[in-house]
Length: 604
Image 1 (cartoon, rainbow, N blue to C red):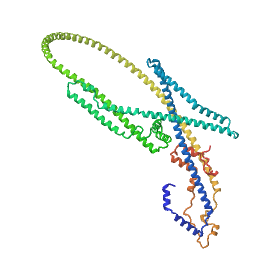
Image 2: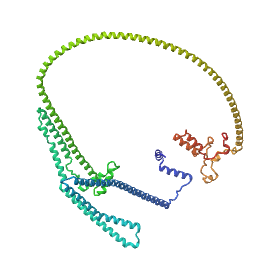
Image 3: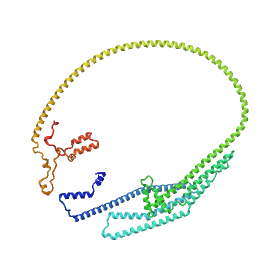
Image 4: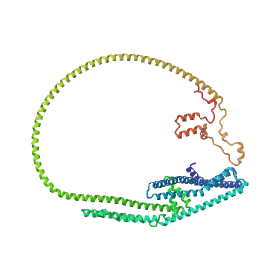
């Protein structure tokens, strides 16, 4: 039942109506009293429902616990994978750094002359540190590893027995003693690490370097290059505009840098946290690369594990503060890089402009000096031009005489060419006539051959037509013979069908229904039912149906698996396929057919 049908049912049928209908039916049937309520059964049903609900609640709690444990194990597995890869990377980086430092010290001690003693001392100090690390490992780490291997061997080879209680108590005391020693060693190392960090932070070297770098950048921003101030420029206005451009650029970047620094007011390098927690925060965030899936959820989970005294809201606020601090520092760095790039470009452009100004000034001076020299040269050029015109006129007269002689020679040459062309055309005309004569003879021969070939093809086609006509007559006779055989078979089959129909009719007459139809008796009340009905009630009279129904009901039709399968195939759009026909032909009916209705028409 769909949601719409359920709403219609709920809106049209109410509980009061059902109760009224129940009372009405019971009143008609003579039932005037209700059955007594069985409270014991109701109590048992309530207890069973309560037990079922408690079991369901227990299962839900268990499922939630399992889901929580699986989620925790999944997070721990992801953390383990990340930290394992980070451990391998750090180990390789440490080994590579130690190897590079050792190679550098070895190469420097062998190549350095005066500073050889310094590098030799560094190598000795490195060797002594290595000996100290090895001694510390043998004194602290090696006993723990040996004790662990000894315990594993005892547990795996000789399981604990009841009579060895004293021995195992001694082993436990030894384990507790080793653990206390290791904890003391770790506390001492932690104290030394904290003292060293405080000593380094007390020096304040990094802060002083940052402050000095900022003061140096500010002084550089406000300074104009010495080359620009001391450069010689023949145009004072151009030099003033260049100096003004440097001043404007310095003021623009100074304002931007001051705006970027104003964002960092009240923020230190640790963003309000102590240095240890901030360093842990940075180290953990740096281990989870953004390429990892759900990297922020992973490092937030690890931060909550490492820093349990910090809430998730404080972690998120510190993350935003740290992002803002990095953004401000990066913007300040980009401003300084942009200023350096623009300053370099402006400085190079200024040098090029100054050089161009000097070149232009030198060109103007040289142009004034060259004008007098050009006037003198122009006078000399006029004289030479007059002489050149006279020479050109003489050359033109000589060229006209040469052209006249060349025209006469060209006319004689063209006349000879015409005579040779006439003789050549005569020879070509004779060759064309010979070619046409040969073509006429060839066409006559080809026409004679085509007439012979056409006559031969006509004879062959007449012979083939005669053969085809004989073949068609033979096929017609063969077809008439087959049609006669087919008609004979059909008459025989028709006679067999008539005989089979007569036999079937005889069988139908033998199994015909003899009893007469009495629907009133079939649908009427029985004697047993009449005895239960009170005598004062009117007897229910069934009306006679309008017509006799000799067919199947919808329930009987739907009960047939062939109908359901055909409907499913039609819904899927497969009822026209070969697969559907084969499937429906193999499905048997719900009841086997009667033997007298079995068809033998298509059986061989």
